[in-house]
View 1 (cartoon, rainbow, N blue to C red):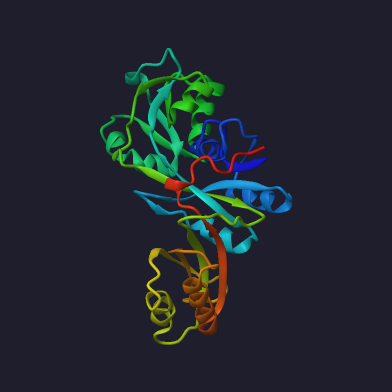
View 2: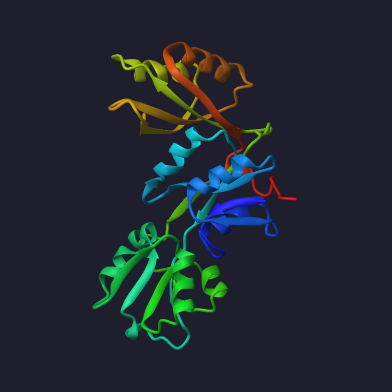
Length: 279
């Protein structure tokens, strides 16, 4: 069973089926916190969550939950985000007075929404939920911004396709499991560390990778809860801890940091399609 945040027809459901397989058994849950907790409780638990959007950046709550729960990243998938304006079949665009969608999706359609007159925009917890609300409430003066799958799931008519402001709109999702994987080939490793609060500590921490010609793919900082103005640093790097350069870098990092934790090694999306099918 694979958990995801959202409802049937959401982009997270699409990502889960793209990574684990079209016929995977899925479990929709309301919040990211519930997704992580549910996955950690079950021995065979796996889940998929969004971690960053190409336009709006990182999803900070997911980074915080990665540290809180003992789960491992086993892969990633990138999904093109296509948002469509949809309504009940008998609704015309000129009759729309309210548009529902998830907050980030609303931001991704800002250019389209700014051109509308006398239309109120309301945020809900999920794009697919926006489509469901219209169907359940039989709102003939409302529309949703959601995926084509959500339109099909709730029998809505698409009034206008691809209303996102930038069509180069992608979200990267990570797949998580209670057990790490040991893939082969070109790998990336995700880790988190807390540097000591002394001058030059971050420079020295990152230098352990530069000294060994290890490529940094992403750096993300988050506040260290309970210690104001101190930070955790999340890194994606090329390689695996089984290789000498990265193993040596991690050992070196542990000497100068208060926390070092490997979150998982896995194949990048381009070479990882369809390799974790669900039973």
